[in-house]
Image 1 (cartoon, rainbow, N blue to C red):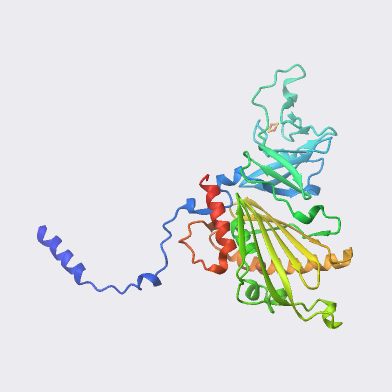
Image 2 (image 1 turned 135 degrees about the horizontal axis):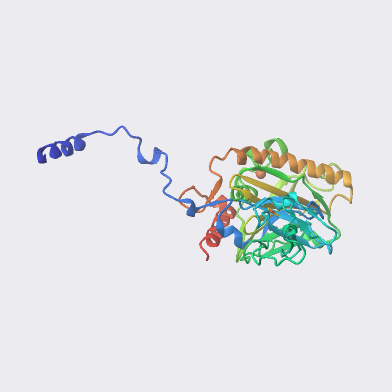
Length: 369
Ligand code: FES
Ligand SMILES: [Fe+2]
């Protein structure tokens, strides 16, 4: 027995491995989901999340998926938004199949139980008028719901992150245009990463705006404040859309300043300032993690350089849709629908400062720091 064991040891020592050198092998993913952020991470419940557009909430119930669960939303008689888990406490039927009266009292479509805007059961038809209603017959509510920027935001638990605020949204010199809501496959963290990434323009967006873009990412400054950051850089670009170039008023190559503002977990804004030609364009990007594999993207433009023209804004929106379509090709193709948070999983460079900061902030959020 002893002899046999020796022989085996001896043979293994002489064994010459044909395995690829360590650096060529596929890395073993030693990390559990704790170091990757999925769309349904429990830490995301303690954040403001966008649920839908304000105009999508009507006086009749409608279901929206968020963080892997379905929520029913409707508008009460006074115009405020009611939001609850889309599940009747009786036999767990989806409440979104029900109907509301003028005051906003919702009647479940299965056995007719009625719930008011606070989620309290006010009628169980099968028990008659004088019935004592069970105290557990109430709806499950998120901690907070609010409307901002024409969107409905919800925090399932008390939010540790602030509500996002687009700085120019209150400025009357800006006109707004909304992109159609995009429901698609992917990870909210990876979509946030993609929006904040500045090195992919010449490659992913070659057919829209990327062809003339510099490959090299200029040095930029980044300032973190809690669960938010802003990053700014200035660069030269060929402004082919400026009529002042043709008129000989300005050179073709002009200065442009880009400012990214991020609010955890998935709210972003890019402000582009044309320093020579004038004008400011802002793109807002709000991502709802619907379930483990899907997101909804709510995006809007604010511009002060279109002279109030609805046609020009429609054109600008169509252009942004084409840009987003280019990003979707990559985002939809990711097989692992989560954002790595452990810095050793990916390779980072100094051109990736915004997206490294994104990971740091989300990592802090997940670990409760
Ligand atoms: S399941 Fe809603 S009333 Fe019975
Ligand atoms: Fe992009």
